[in-house]
Image 1 (cartoon, chains in turn red, purple):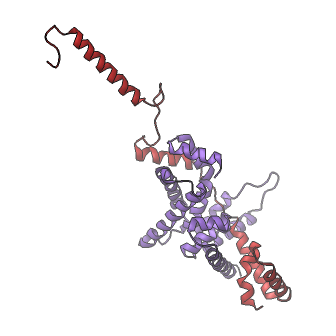
Image 2 (tube, helix red, strand yellow):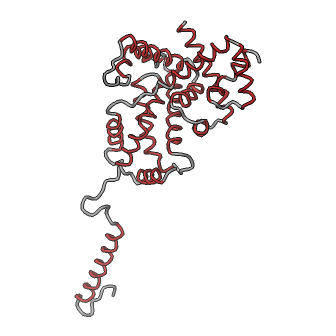
Image 3 (cartoon, helix red, strand yellow):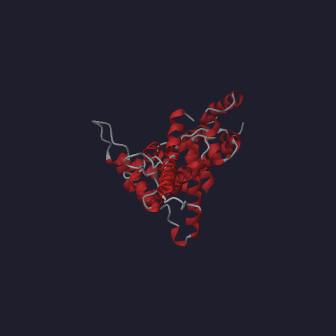
Length: 120
Length: 195
């Protein structure tokens, strides 16, 4: 194995995903080659330094998003709940209106003077 | 996807504000970290990360649960980063999207994790850590956006190859070979600037 081939395997070796035969071949090369050992050490340090780069969200991140959402939707983005009864029960409202109209019609029918019936 | 996640998503689809807040609390750090390392500028990163969550809320009805929620979320974040990188590259005055890189050396000492009780790092140790962070961020910035995304997803956020494949739409073999090139480029950059 030459230096270039060894370097190609560094990622899989560092990830622990190198097939056993290749791993043994690489390790054999590394045991005899100080240049590749040094390169592998530098490679591992470089990759290791990346794992320390996690950055937490700044304070006030959530309120900033909430503010944006409220501003863009003019306060309508989140479903507003009807304070007393949950959501407005539109199906019950329409049923009540139909019943009210029926009652009104019947009342009108019975309250009208004889001989003058609605629809006549 | 776990049952708890599914319930949370259903609540979000019903426009439940508490569910939205919970999602930002759970995923906010990861999204911000990804975006910050992709873009390199704190104000830009804050803006994009916020936009990611606004997009999530606006498009949650289109999430069918075929992938993990976090995968879907990070895909949105990655796409928004790529769009912003293109936009910034077109703006002549925006060549310094990575302006924070230099600034980081001075400021990130204060953003390092607090020392354990009874142990205070010497200022030179903190400065050294800040310089290394700045140098590593500059190495990431030198990569093109495709390689940068792979490095951030794998080596900063420590996602599996499977998740990275789901986010980027690349085959595992492609992810691995590109990631190797990106890692070697980072190593070369650090070698060059630390020797």
